[in-house]
Image 1 (spheres, rainbow, N blue to C red):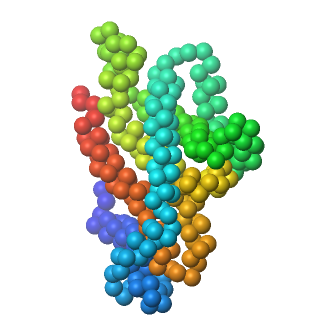
Image 2 (cartoon, rainbow, N blue to C red):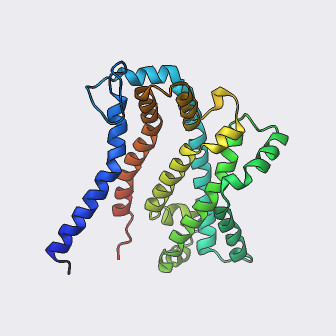
Image 3 (spheres, one colour):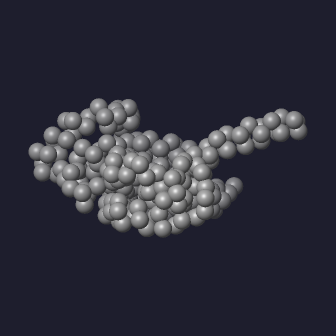
Length: 272
């Protein structure tokens, strides 16, 4: 049983690390709302100037960049999530020849960084006339996301009680019905967690967009922020405002799905 002193030390350590994690975020937010004509410095605060976000939005063309990021992220998350659920169910609960070897092929995809294959990938996509298109951003990230999603969902389905699956089979349910009507409601926490992770990774991808697209209208938000930084290196307020604009969708998605994640854990519990 944990003593009062141990609890105090634990909360003190957690509070310290929380402050260390929040300090850069607070500093960027404070810098983003400073007076742009007042010689801004990182972390200082002299009042709220929300016009910095409007200026950064207009000068940085973040509307176009965010649209591209939303298109790519939604396409990757939806397609990779759907395929990951199917493959995770197959590897977790089905028995077929070569399943173990094929699963290791999926795991191999997790070990290869995008930096190691970016050059041959560029030439392959260029030969297929896919560079400077959304497909050049969607397809590679979808492949990498399916590798992780399969591993993630397989771990969940392998933990599902066999009695639940056997009961559904006895009632005459097909594999498709068992997956979508019996198991998927229980898998909601795992699916939502996977969705958050895939969205964050896809949204923050920089190198792929830098190599695969040269059309400004196809630039994603992180890439657009990099070009915006190159044009405004001396203006910390606009840089901080642009960083907040790019990071805000990830924060909103995380907060929204976190609420549903907790609800899914409570409603998806197996009741004995």
